[in-house]
Length: 206
Image 1 (tube, one colour):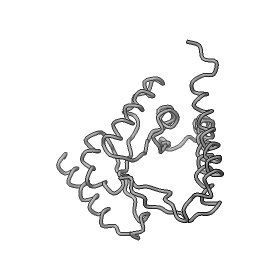
Image 2: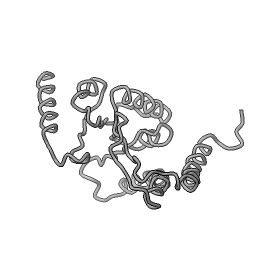
Image 3: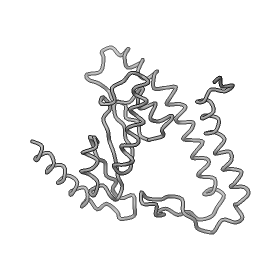
Image 4: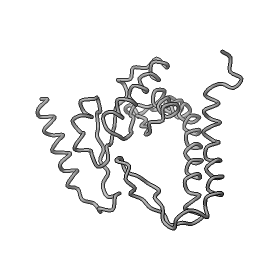
């Protein structure tokens, strides 16, 4: 079957049209917005970030979408240039200079990870990790790369300690933990527990 427009170009076109549609919906529904509405949700789907109704707050989401799309376009263009420049350094780097790419978009981000990254970071439980890792493996196969070359860095939000063993068993190399972003200030208790979990796991494997 011949495509008048290549499938990946369709993805790019739709990706740019979605924020445009969001702007149109914002214009149409703005008078009906409540004075306070949610703008961010945690891993369990509970709202944990709120905005007060204003033109700036309503525009924030579509503007952010345009920014992310532009950023991904720049990454796709610039990563090969960065690699080429690193190869020309004289003297060369003392060791490998790894690229870490964060995200789990199945068509663009994970393809960039397969092509360029030495480290990959994203979020979710074991099921989410395994699903995204399988897609990453498919992209690696297409570019002739061994997916085991890519270090897996993963976060699980408020469930980090609960699912740490599951993630490690699934192949995650490093587990990240956010501190202070949920309004609880900077309580490092959970970080201490995570370090203790790491030490116990390493001791058991020794």
